[in-house]
Structures are given as C-alpha cells and as structure tokens.
Image (cartoon, rainbow, N blue to C red; front, side, top):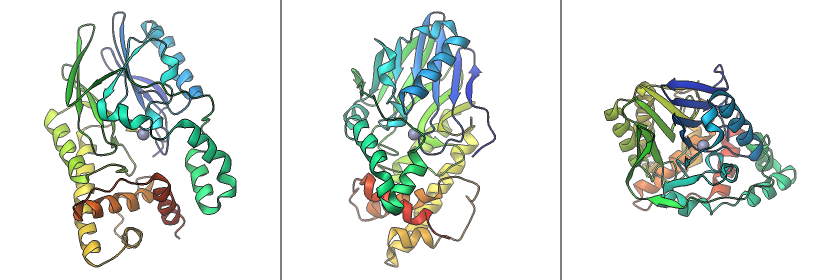
Amino acid sequence: MTGYAPGLQQVGEGFYAYLQPDGGWGWSNAGLVVDGEATLLVDTLFDLRLTAEMLRAMRAAVPAAARIDTLVNTHADGDHCWGNQLLGDARIVASRRTAMEMGELPPATMAALAEQAPNMGELGAFFLDCFGAFDFSGIELVLPQHTFNGQLTLSVGARELQLIEVGPAHTRGDTLVYAPGAGVLFSGDILFSGSHPIAWAGPVSNWIAACELILAMKPEVIVPGHGPLATPDAVRELKQYFEYLYELARERHAAGMTPLQAARSISDDRWARWGNAERLVVNIANIYSELDGEQRPVNPLAAFEQMAQLAARG
Ligand SMILES: [Zn+2]
C-alpha cells in the first residue's frame, strides 16, 4: 500500500499518528497522546535510527514530547518495541503476556540472520526483501516494568485511555489503546491497513472477536499498526477476510492439502490490492491448527521458509 504521507499527523485534539509508508514488513506506525505537559507514546519503531527520527519529529511538532512520561507497547514484535531504550526513564506499560513474549526473539538474532542472509538462498533473499532496510545493531531491549491482564485505564492529563488486551491473535498479548472521548483507536497490529494480516499466535477466531469488539466501540479514526489511517470499514473488511479464509481453509484441510498448497490454490483475487500476500500461508496454517484443536505456536523461521516459497510463485 503506497500513496499516503509519512510522518506525524494530528488525528484529534492532543492525538497524533506517526506513519511509515508503505506499511509492509517492519514499517510500523506509532502514536502520541498529549495534554499539557503530560505525554504518552504508543509503540516505538524497529530500530534506533527510525525511533530517534520519530522522536525528533514529535518534539518539533509538540514541544511537550521532549519528555515522554509513559510508553505503551501494543505487542511484542520488534517493530513496535525495539526503540524502547531511547525513551529514558519513561514508564513502559504492556500486557503481561506481551512482556513475557518480548524477550523470545532477541534483536541480536535478527542482526545475525541479516548478516547470514546473503548465503541462505531463497529464504535469505526473502528475509532481506522484508528486513534489509533496518539496522538491528546496538539494540538493547528494554522490557515493560508495568504489566496488566485484561484491561487498564490510563490518564494523560485529562484524557482517558483504555488499554484492552484482545490477544492472543496477531501475537500472544495484543493490546488496543482506545480514547473513548476522542473516538481515536490505536489498534496495534490487530489492524494492518491495506495489507494481509499475519496470525503469529491466533486463534484466528479470537482475532475475529477482536474485530467485533472494535466495531462495537465505533471509533472515528483508527491508527493501524501498519498502513494508512483507517475507519471501522477496514476492520469490517478484515473480519470478512478472516471469515472467508476460515471457510476456505476448512475445505482445503478436509481435502488433505498442506497450508502451502491451500494458499497456492486461492485464485479468488478479492484482496489483490493488499500487500504481503505471502502471509496467507501462515494464516492458513494457523487456522489448520485451530481446526485440529491444538493451537500450535508458529515457528518464525519455518514460517518465513513457507512465505518465501509462496512469494516466489509465478
Ligand atoms: Zn508490526
């Protein structure tokens, strides 16, 4: 998805989105909430350079952002928390499951993979396509000190924010950050706007329930984890995508097809304009494990191998 402006945009009185086109692998969005001197950041970015650039842009537009009081990490993926170390003594908040998941894929592992990728054939080439633009050196992961289960209400000056844990779905502890008074929702990666989502954790039925929850909240503007600003229409479309994929996976599963065969068999191009179609194979595998009654954790390396094969078709 291209055609939207990068950088900081106001989305409400005291609410800002920081967008990174094109929203593909690692190109995540973040958010800023301000009231007087009180500040809260929603997510950091994938590396130190990008996060520092974002913080500079925020300070230039909103002087109070020179000091961030609170950082919320919506989930454990590196493109939402690997800039945490640049936030000084900000209080870092996340769901307990997110905090536990964060340490599992260390930045040093990604740095090592990026170094080895040129010798890793098709998989390495795909890995560099996805992540070659980022610099994983010097990242020291700073974990949240303040965790919660389920829901937590935070105040930023007079503005009230509701943190609502809806995972496991994209990851194990996905959290929505919602400002009911302003109608602004920071969805994290529960919404990829303009590209295929990816269900690392699942179950997918839980993600469908998260879509229903968002639709019931009726936000006016959604800052997605990736892609351009969105409205509930994008969530409705995402829900339809998962419902459609669920039925399709059920048929392919019953026919004995592997997730890769199932993904390759999809000729219906209703989401042709969405980016990252290789994620279909991971989403189908995830639905398979739900159908089998045992939610198997996705092995990231095996998932990238499958996606590299799917991306290489045609
Ligand atoms: Zn992300």
